[in-house]
Amino acid sequence: MTATQSPRNHRPLGSLSVSPLSLGGNVFGWTADEAASFAVLDAYVAGGGNFIDTADAYSAWVPGNKGGESETVLGNWLASRGNRSDVVIATKVGAHPDLKGLSAATIKSAVDGSLARLRTDYIDLYYTHYDDESVEVGEFLTALDDLVRAGKVREIAASNILAKRLEESLAFSAREGLARYVALQPHYNLVSRDTYEGELADVAARHGLAAVPYFALASGFLTGKYRPGATVDSARSGGALKYVDTDRGRRVLQALDTVATAHEAEPATIALAWLAAQPTVVAPIASARTVEQLPALLAVADLTLTEAELALLNEASA
Image 1 (cartoon, rainbow, N blue to C red):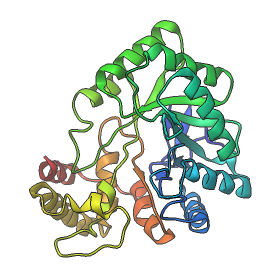
Image 2 (cartoon, rainbow, N blue to C red):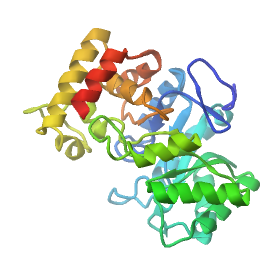
Image 3 (tube, helix red, strand yellow):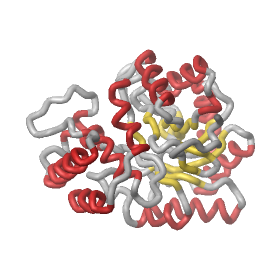
């Protein structure tokens, strides 16, 4: 089966067909070594997943790393499994320490580096990682269009962009007949709704963009592991702990527990199911360091929340 065919529960994203959970590759080469990453990737695909998210900058923040480690691990896995046509690979440009920004020259250099590390001749979904307001939208969109025409990229998308610039980018593509953004990767979850809802979500809805939210589990907080007095051994615990002692955090955990009990599910599954039910959202992104963490994430494909449960979670997270 190729990435453009649609098995059960898969959803359209531009010309692509993606599973309801996108596997985050930020942990590959960071908190998961190559062997652990391969095991997670194998289990994710075996569980019906086909949509893997990475970036050329992952994981430059780790001492001794340069950026590109995640793509390298993923490329080695693709080569060893021989399954390139079965998966949708998303990566990003603009934040690698040696290739920052969105100038045409930077994009054209960065894509070749990503293709080499991924050991492939095409990228399914190529994101501008952060907007670069020092560059006119016409410059980077023309560069991205060149990549699409050359067959190096199938679809383009944006992450970390303001509504106004997104609207401007879409208008430019339409006016000039260039490749257009088909997806948006916003920061969005039950304890961070205003980072997407409102003007940005309205632009996505108006133009039919697919939202693929990152920080879908708020650095692990929405798994329910982080509670007052609990100690969690995780490299990302600092990001999650900031929610523990907030009123919203406590309300959301209580609501997640209530709904999870009703479904005999994990809080993480409920948090992802809430995201999946939101307008424009096609597939939330969540990462797993171990195979044991995957079932609760993959379960989002088979769990539908009732209107009453959505209302409870909406009220708790307001």
